[in-house]
Length: 265
Image 1 (cartoon, rainbow, N blue to C red):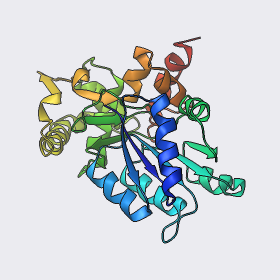
Image 2 (spheres, rainbow, N blue to C red):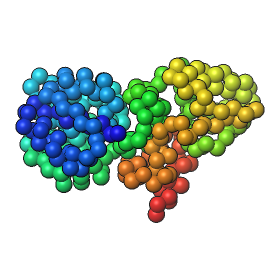
Image 3 (cartoon, one colour):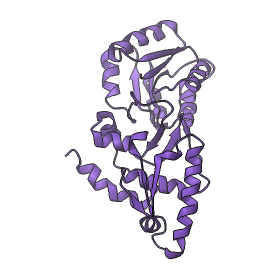
Image 4 (cartoon, helix red, strand yellow):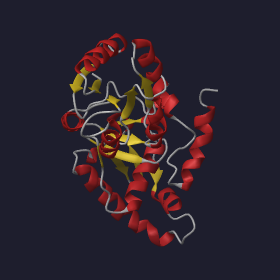
């Protein structure tokens, strides 16, 4: 079930927003907060997918709250609500998903939901490994980024994610990780990187998401949530989330862009 957080310091605004959101998302689990501090507490306790956030609030402004939310979970969808249009530039600088002028009605909400930056994970378990491929590659669990002791371990996970369940040999991984270097001496190092990657995944109970058969490795795609996989399934919000960038911190990511851009043409 999708979880939605509505934050506004005015009680009637919270109640009104809740009523309009329910018209659009009747099955959503809706949480209400009257301050930024309360919003952050709820966000830390619940797996929130969508936040409606008032800009002007006493104590902590909506823009400050949005910044904290993005630090906690980069893929959270935030829609700012305000009676003052001059905040729009600041909101977009934070890469916030939407901006609505009060009073807000169901039609406004419905239109904004069609242009969210990130797919809404309605059916994704809160305790599921989530992999973001559009833009920079990110791996999260329970809303927090995974820590990788070596950047090459993260890159292996990224590449196996891009392979979409297909196997990658040790030689192939060497070619990807060290494209301009002597690669023969690196083959044994792949084992070290894979062990570290498995240990990282083991900490969250997902070591079995990787498969190893002789000198080949692959990822069990059905055990993760991934914007790329949702795109391939035809998820409309995932299709809208794709903005022409795929794992842009890795040069090899460009190889997958042609297929993405021609998928639904």
